[in-house]
Image 1: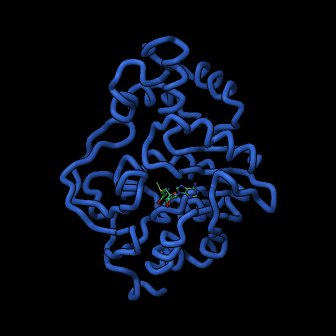
Image 2: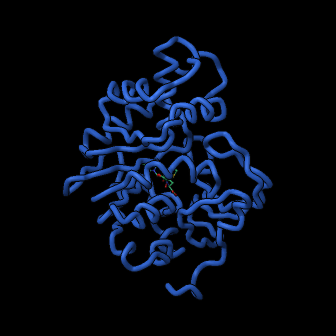
Image 3: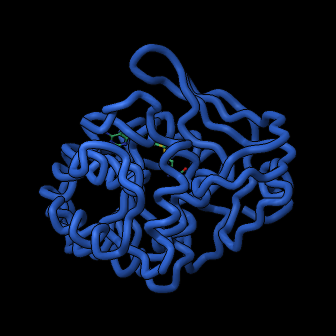
Length: 263
Ligand SMILES: C[S@@+](CC[C@H](N)C(=O)[O-])C[C@H]1O[C@@H](n2cnc3c(N)ncnc32)[C@H](O)[C@@H]1O
């Protein structure tokens, strides 16, 4: 696909004052079975770490959930900030679980530490819409050549070669009761050397709350490392000195309000 053939919507200007060095494909509006890609106005949005940014709008992927339809992905500060740790940590053979808008998979392929990207997506209509929009085709040849897309259930799929890192994002919500079970099942099947999953900070916060029987005052690096070790999953832990403070700042926005949700 040449630049002239690219679909018309560039999400970057819609992000307004939110800046990112990551790559954004162009999208086009359309409907694929129960899935749709639309552009919507959005005057502001909260990032994952709590800050609010003035924006113009976003491109959004909506699709089926158990009882109707929901937004599965959109190009907003929250999605960018909540996936960039995993994108930066990707290396070698990386498995991306959940294709969505193809944004994370494309950025993983652009990471020079990555030489192969296997994307596992359960819904053929999502794969069809990403093909129709030419998302992979908009990448430079070197990144494009790394990507293969497999139609399979991420909870059952097993790799044909060793996996260095996983980026898992098959959920519509940050916090879900079965998320830790899903993550352990994926890791049991894949045996990756390192694993990042969308919203892992909120699920680590759940463990911290559970352990202290309420909302802790803070979370330091030692506690995060200990919580990660207890999960038995080789979760990515960025070496940011303020990782714990960020989790504490983000948690009120992305976890349920009800007391005891962590149980
Ligand atoms: C939140 S979106 C992924 C967004 C993606 N990170 C991006 O950057 O655009 C989740 C995707 O996971 C897919 N999915 C949900 N459950 C799945 C499963 N069990 N196995 C494979 N894919 C699944 C959905 O169809 C959807 O395409």
